[in-house]
Amino acid sequence: MASISKDDVVYLARLSNLSLTDDEVESLQGDLANILDYVGQLSSLNTEGVEPTYQVNDLENVDRLDEVIDYGVTREELLATAPEQKDNQIKVPKVI
Amino acid sequence: MASIQNIVDAVSSGSSSATEQVQEALKRANDKKDFNAILSLTNERAIKRAEEIDAKIKSGEKPGRLAGVPFIAKDNFLTFGSPTTAASKILGNFETPIQATAVEKLEAEGAICIGKANLDAFAHGGSTENSAYGPTKNAFDTERVAGGSSGGSAVAVALDIVPFTLGSDTGGSIRQPASFNGVVGVKPTYGTVSRFGVVAMASSTDVIGPIPKNVVDAELIMDILAGKDPYDATTLPDFFKPQTDVGNLKIGVVEEFMNEGVDSEVLEKTNQYIEKLKESGHTVETVSLPLAPMCLAMYYIIVPAEVSSNLARYDGVRYGARAQANDLSELYGKSRDQGFEDENKRRILIGSYVLSSGYYDAYYNQAAKARTLLIGQFNSLFESYDVLVGPVTPTVAFKLGENTNDPLKMYMTDIMTTPANLAGVPALSVPAGETAEGLPVGVQLIGQRKSDAQLLALAKSMEENHG
Image 1 (cartoon, rainbow over the protein chains, first blue to last red):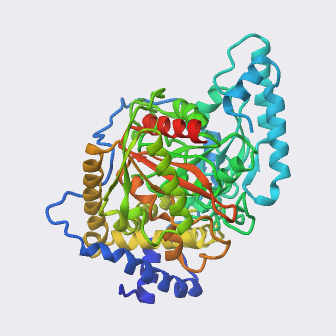
Image 2: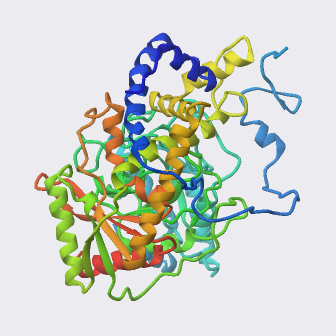
Image 3: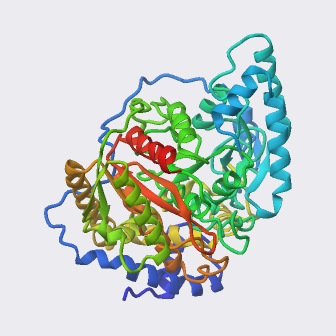
C-alpha cells in the first residue's frame, strides 16, 4: 500500500502550484493512495536492461528554419486573451 | 441522417444549400439541448460561412469535398465563433485568435463548424461527468453516461445533430463514447493528424480523429485530416490512402480482452462480429498480448506525468480565469484550485508524485520501460496478424453517478483502449449491435502503425456486407 500523508499531499500541491482547501487535502489523500497502490503493480515487472519509451513515432530532431512565421494573428489579439494587460504587456501582481 | 457524400452532392447540385444544412443542424442542436452534448453554437459565424459557400457554388467555383457539411468540434479544439473552454472553469471565457489545423483543413473543404461539444474537463475522464458544465446524457438512455471524454461529440452524432464530430483520444476518449452511443470512433496512428490548436493532455499519446455515423464517412474525413503540419512537429508525412479492396486478412482475437470480467452481452456481440469476420473470408485466431492487463497501470503513470506538465501553463496569467490574489504565487495557486475540476487535480498531483525525485525511477521510468515491452509484444503480433479484435470496453454505458465516487473504478473503463495509445497504433470502435436492454455495444479493431486505411477498409467491408 502506497502511504501518502497529508503533508505529502500538501507538498505535492505546492510542487503543482495548487492551493488546495483542507477538505480537498483530506479527500485527495485517500484517492492518491488508492491510485498509487494500483499503478504500483508495475514494480513486479522485470524491466532489467530495457530502454524506456518516451515517444512512439521514431521522429528525431525535427528542425525548421529559424524564421518568423506569420500566423495572421496580431499582438493585440494575442494579448487580449490575457486577463489583464497594460502597455502591450500582461499585467500581474507585484513580484518584488 | 444522410451520409456526408449525400449532403455534399445535394449542396453542390443545388437541391439543398449550405445555409439550409447549417440552419437545420442548428435547429436540431437546440431541439436536443436536454442531452447537454453541446457547450456552445457558432450561430452567426456558421450562417455567414454557409452563405459564402452557397455564393461560391452559384458562381461556379469548386466548393470543396465537404461543401455545406456541418460539424461540431470537441471543446478542446480552438475554433472561431464561440469560446473554447475544454469544459473547464479556468478557460471558461477563452476566445481564441487561432483555429486548430484540423478545423482549418475541414473548413478549407467547405465544412462548417457549428459548435463545440461537451467533454470531461481537459479530457480527463471516461463519462463526461467531469465537465464543469454538467454531464452529457447517453443518446440511448438519458439515465446513463455518454462515455468520455469525447461524450458530447459521440452523442451529437448519435442524435443526428451533425453527420460527424471531432474528438481527441488519449486513452480511449474517442472509441469509448463512440461504443456507448452506437457510432464510429477513429483513433488514428499517433502523428497522423495535426494537434496544433488542440488543448494538450498527454503529448505522447494524444491523437485526434473523427466520430461519424458510418465508416464510409470516417474514411473521407481521415483522408482530409491526415498529413504533415509545419505547426505540429510530431506529425508524419501523409501516408493515408483509402483502400478499395481489403482482401483476406489474418485477424487475432486478443484473449486478455475476452475475459470473465467483461459483460456477457458485450462478449456475445464481440463474438458475433468475429463470426462475421470469418464468414467474410478472414482467418481468425486467438492471440495473446500478455501485457494488456498492465496497460492501465502504465497509462495512469505516464499520462498524469504528462498532464502535470501540460497543465502547468494554466496559471491565471496569460489566458483564462484569474483569481483575486495579493501576490503572484497566491494568484497561481488560487486560479488553478478554482479553475480545475477534482479529476484534473488528482492527475496533476499523481503526475507530480511519479516525476518527483525519489519516485521517478520506481514509477515513471518503470512505466516507460514497460511501454517498450508492450510495443515489442504488439510488434511481434503484427508480424503474423494484420488486425487485432476485441471489445472496446468491459461494459455498456453505465448509470450517471455510478462511478463518480471511485476514481479508480472510473479508470477501469479504459482497460482495453489504453494499449493502442501507449503503442501509438491505430484503433477503431465500430457498432456491433445492441444489448437486450437496447444499449449499444462497440467492437474494437486495432492495426499496426500506419495501417489506418486498411483498418477502415476492413470495417467498411463489414459495414457494407453485414451492416
